[in-house]
Length: 249
Length: 372
Image (cartoon, rainbow over all chains, first blue to last red; front, side, top):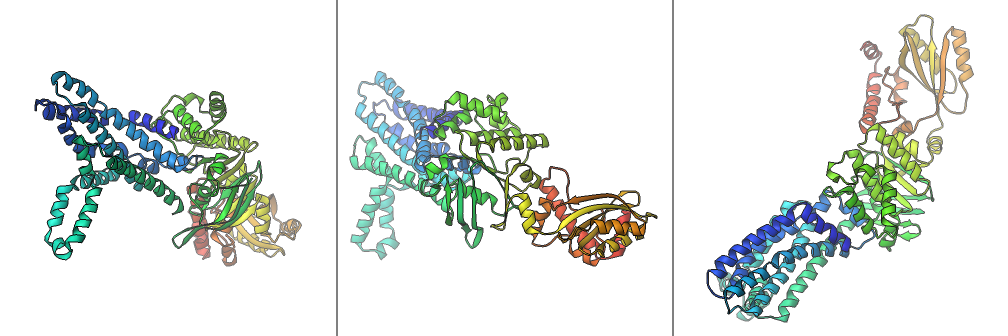
C-alpha cells in the first residue's frame, strides 16, 4: 500500500494537479473566510464551511478523476495487477494519497483559526474542530466515491463529470428536499401516510448533507461518524470489486 | 516450470482461447507465434494473472495462479504489449517504484544497477520516461520485468516498434536471459522466433496449431522438401522456361514446380518440391544433361518457418493450387529472405501469394506480367 501511496503523492505534484487543488482550495477558503466570517464580525467560523461544501464538490473530482481511469488508459494497470500485491493495497493506496492531499488543504483552517482568535475573543474552538472534522470525514466519503467512479471508466473527463453530478445530487438530497418529495401530489396520492413516513425517515438517514450540517452546528454524533466511515469502506470495497470483475470479464 | 492445462477464455460467445495446454521446462525459451488476434496476448495475460481464465489451470513453479496469485505473480516478470510505464516519472523513480511494488529483497542499488546495465538504460536513468524514444521505453519495460530476478519471464512482442539494431540487441539480450530464466516470448515476426526460441508454439484461432522445435514442426506439418534450381537453356527464351517446367514436373517424386525470378538474363530459377521420399537430384541432372541444359545452381531448402506458418494459419498448402493450372507468376515468390520481417511485410507476402494465384489463371496474363 505504501508503494502505491508514495507514487500517487509524487504524481500529484509532478503532474501539477496537487498544486491546482491546493491553490483553488486556499483561494476559495480564504475568500469565504473573509466574506462569511470576518465581515460578519462574529467569532463563528461555520458559515465558511457551509460555503466550502460546494467548493469541495467541484474540487474532489480533480483529485480522484485520474486515479484509476488513467491507469487503465495507459495500460499501467497491467503492471499493478500482475505485481504480487492485493487489490485492496492498490485501492487504499490511492484513496489515502488523495485523502492526504485533502487533509493538507483543509488544515489551512488552523491558520484562519489563529487569525480569528486574534480578532475576536468569542471564538469557539469546539465549533471549529467540529467543522474541521465534519469536512474531513465528508471529504473522505467523497474521495471514496470519486475513486470508485474513476474505476468505472477510462476517460478522466467522464469520471470527473459523473463525480460532480453525483456529489451535487447528494448535496441537494437534504431534509427540505425530502419535505418537497413528501408533499408531492403523486406520491401522497399513491402511498399511505404510514409507509410514506417510514420511507422518508429511511431516506433522511441517508442524507449526507443533513448529517454534515449537524456537525457544523457543533453536534458530534457517533452514528454520523459511522455513517461516513461506512460509505468510505463501502465504496473502496466497490472499487476493489470493479477491479476484480474486470479480471473475470 | 510452467504448466498450462486446458486453458479456455471466453468473451461472450467467442472463445478467444480454446483449450490450450502446454508445458515449459526450466531454462527454455518458448516462442508463441500466431497472427494478430490468435490469442497470444490473452494467453499471456492469463499466465500473469492479469485476467482470469474461464476454465483450465495454470501452474507457475507448481503454484496455481488463481489460488495463490501473490505467490505465483512473485515469480513472474511480465512485459505486456504496451509497457506499463508511468510517463511522468524518471526512469530511476519508476524502477524504484517497481522494486517496492514487487517487494524485492535484493540490495536495491546494486540490483537496479545490474538491471540497468543489462538493458543498457544506465545513461537515461535521470530522464523522464515520456521524453524517451520508443526503443528506450521498451527497454525500460524489459528492465521492470527483470526486477527481482523472476525465474519466469513473459514478454509480449518485445521488439515491436524497434529499429533493426535495437531488435538485434533485444534478441541477444533475451537469449542471454534464457540462460538464467524461463522465457515465454510472443511474436508474429517469424525470423525473430526462429532466431531466439528453443521451442515454438503456433497458436491460431485460440488453439495450439503446432508445438515443437522449428525442425520438428516442419517435419510434422509436411513431408515435402524444397529445392531451388537455376537452369540455363541454349536459347534463353520464355518458351524454354515452360519446357523446363514441364520436364521437371514429369520427374517422378516431384510434386510441384514453379518458375521463379529471372536471375540472370534469360535464365530462371525454379522452385521444386518433392514428396520427401525420393531423391530427385540425379534425375534432374540426367534430364538437364539429356536436353543440353546447364544446371548453374542447386540448393536444397527445407520449408521455412514462414511457409509452415502460412500453411497452418491460412489452412491450405500454399502455392500448390496454381501449379496445377499453369506456370506461376514470376518474381512474386512470397518469401522474404532478410532476417527482419515486419507485419506489413508479412501482409505483403500474403498479398503476393494471392496475386500469384490470380495471375496464374491464364498464360496470357503471365506474359503481361513478365513485361511489367
